[in-house]
Length: 173
Image 1 (cartoon, rainbow, N blue to C red):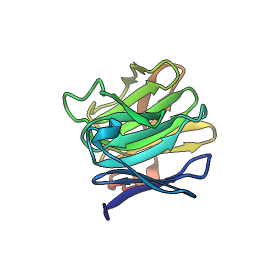
Image 2 (tube, rainbow, N blue to C red; image 1 turned 30 degrees about the vertical axis):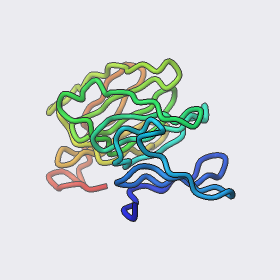
Image 3 (spheres, rainbow, N blue to C red; image 1 turned 120 degrees about the horizontal axis):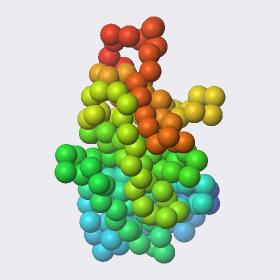
């Protein structure tokens, strides 16, 4: 597809392209396109990342999370998918893969392949997550209209924090 949503270079220098019609990988040997026959049962790939254990992860905008292993995609349905399964951002941090969606935060232990519950200490519960960032070894995410949230992996919680400079303003990532 000509509609590229994400460009990602992995640790072996392969270039991955997340598109509206699947995923492509560029190497010194050419281009490989990944679609339904490779286990990618939804084509809108908006996010790509690699975890410290070298696993590759792909976020679809509409059908959850995929891991690329042994030249195939393995699908993981998000637990909060009743509301929305559209992934905007993926962020490896510590032993977890943080998943920002149109309707909130999902957390995945990429070694055990299990979703982990986190509690929102603020309101609202449903947040459109635009991006993640790290500051002083802490993880934060930016939401649409509701500001910035700090993630606490030890307590498995997240809460809204105040930045006086940005209060009452819409924040975009």
